[in-house]
Each structure stands twice: as structure tokens, then as C-alpha cells.
Length: 189
Image (cartoon, rainbow, N blue to C red):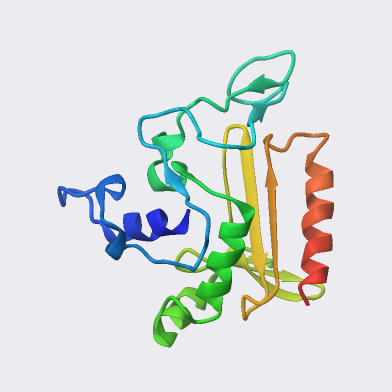
């Protein structure tokens, strides 16, 4: 996941290069043993993977029952959606990032220099901060139709919570998601 996202962020539009065709030395290696894939044109996902579902009442497609959208290629969101990874990869990436193993200290300080969006959330250079009753947690969220991911960590990256759902939150699952994220945030302190 993160190797392609980091590379995409470093490749300017119009440069003639793209994330899917870059060589491995240009990508950050977080020490993960998994092999994240970058889905550009192929809707098939190799190996075991979660299926994504749109639930009834979703804003994208009318449906009376859960609709499997796994084969819809996520590359429409470019590097934000085209990378297929695991919770272990995300935890490894944030551990390396927040632990100072990916960037120089000055760059990591810039990422943590967040702008307050509301009383709880701050947003920096690709990094969220969220104030909780148990302290501030760091990370990011992501999603596309049928999938949602939350990855939050303590400041050092030593403790993390990665929550992945194979359905976008709705009126029924939203409160459970909030409870799970809140409980996880309490465990990060």
C-alpha cells in the first residue's frame, strides 16, 4: 500500500511517469513482508481478500440488498484508491513513519504540524490528528464505495489501531464504527 502511495505523491502530474510504472528503488520500504498491489486496469484481486459491499440506501447505486462491488476497479481515485493492502501493512507503515524511520525529523515535524479543522480533528501533510479523552492519536482514514479504513496510532507509532470494513458505514453500522474507533483510541494511550 504505502510504497505506491509514497511514490505517487512524489511523481508530478505531466512528468511522463506514473505510480504503476515506477521502479522499486523509488518507493519507501516499510519492512512489510506483504506485497501490496497497485490496481490500475485489472479488476481481479489475487489471493484472499475482503469483498466490498454497497448497502441498501447507499448514495451511489440503488439496491435492495448488499451489492458486491469488489470487481469495480478502484483506480478512479488513483493512488488513493488503487492500492490494495492489509491492516498489517498499514500498521507497519505508520509504525515506521511515526517512529522516524521513513522521513528526516524535520519532515515528520511538518507532517505533524496540523491545521485545526474542528475542535477534535487536525489535518497536516497527509496526517490526521484527533483529540480523544485519552490523548491525541495520529493517522488517516480512507474509503471508497464498499470499503472504509481507519488507521490511528499513538505519537510514536508503537501502538496502533487499524479498522477495515468491507461496507461503507450506514445508519445501522455508523454507531458501531464510532464505538469501535473510540474504544480503540482509548487503548492507544
